[in-house]
Image (tube, rainbow, N blue to C red; front, top):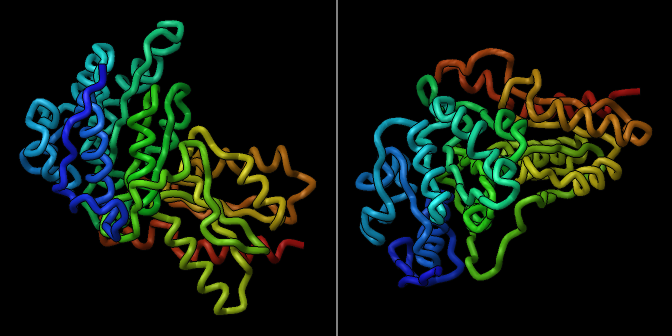
Length: 342
């Protein structure tokens, strides 16, 4: 039976609506979820005493005790193995894999076991595990600390994959993920950790599986997610000031399942689409979106679906990061090319 425990106020007091950073929003979501259900456990490398590398889990061990928020050995495979065992025993694990580039050692546990337990048990054994992974680039980190792993997880049947772009989404997507009966890969855009926004914990945000139009436009639909939503919005502002194409920005939020209805409605309106993501171009998430749009909206497209992405190379050293990552210029170039198609 679920036991309700006293809610902590270490993340900013009882005020249900406040302007906070994304880090604080994720921390509040974890705190509220742990307060609401004693089965929720948070664990990973340095999440306990230190409070996480980015201080996302700051104060949780102190508030809830080391049995509910605890450090693990440096073993990503072991972390997910622990989560599997705890879920089987009726807990709701929320493990953290400290950086995206170090999620690969846990790949076998996630793909071979976490994603398949419901089918393996003919639906009798849910896997309510939310795997938090600080993800993507833009912070000038060293090797293995800035990767785009989303396509691996989206390709794996049995996994739900979400990524927030705002503090409000960070809070509500995480709350929804922890309450979800199946495994969720929750990708946190590190470059937006210190962005701020209003989070209202009394008004639920859109559910998993729902995209949001962040800016209405008439000429080109920009499909993106995570940290690049802000980039797309900046590009739309520049285009508007420079008499460029009117960009409609769609924040996918949920990569699997995908809200294809919202995507289709936007592309039908504009007739053009550009997909913006950090990962390499070949077989990146944009390839699937381009294929589906071409299959289902072929006669309604005014131009081919274009992609503004990272390059087909390993992630570069920090000093070259800005040249590698898709930015405003790369997106605006694609949007203009879409407009120039005969």
